[in-house]
Image (cartoon, rainbow, N blue to C red):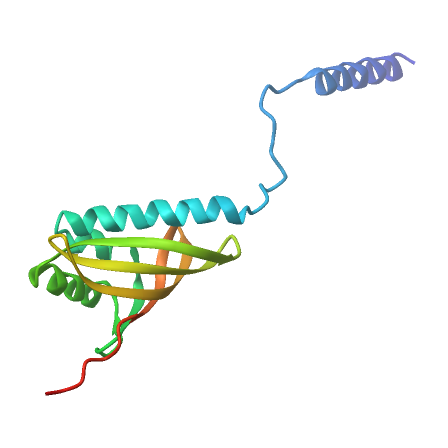
Length: 163
């Protein structure tokens, strides 16, 4: 009987300790639902970073908005793949005098991992508009940040006839 009482006391003591332990931290088991409006705001903020980098003449900063294996597909040039090539393209624009771009997001669709953005860009040399284009950009979430995966744009202006 003594063994049984010792077993009972030990079991009760262990149960009391186990159930009386309390943690102040809550374990979050539910994932926050994806909100497209929030994602659009995040894309607009990323576009602001891009515009600021362009205004500073920072082609590296512009290229850093892209994934390492991103593809740039602009009018009048072959597709460019990778950050180094993308940096070179934007560096060329900056060297040619382009010193400001205005990006406007019209719509965003997608999921928490991949978004499509439709928008427009106005391109400036000093305060003179030298280009107006529309674009589709695919954004992918990489390391918690939205990065450009594909970027395709074409001009709103009619092609100029050759002389």
